[in-house]
Image (cartoon, helix red, strand yellow):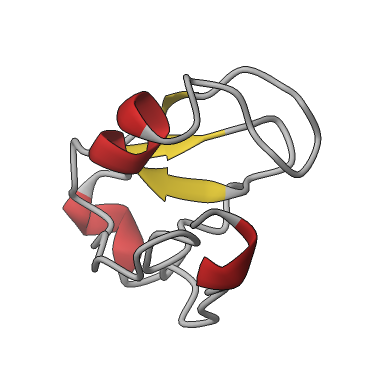
Length: 79
């Protein structure tokens, strides 16, 4: 099950579970669409994998399977 991390690792923008702007790699590194496209060229700088749209978890499933609250924010690596 995907962690659905709450924010962009690059700019710390909030990315709630229902966000259509969240992008992830196969390791679940999480980025906003703007950073993914403009700063990262759709490649994860951590693993080199492609970035794809993160699926949205249905709201009725969030109660039993909540999104992660653990933020990863490392702006010094991407600026």
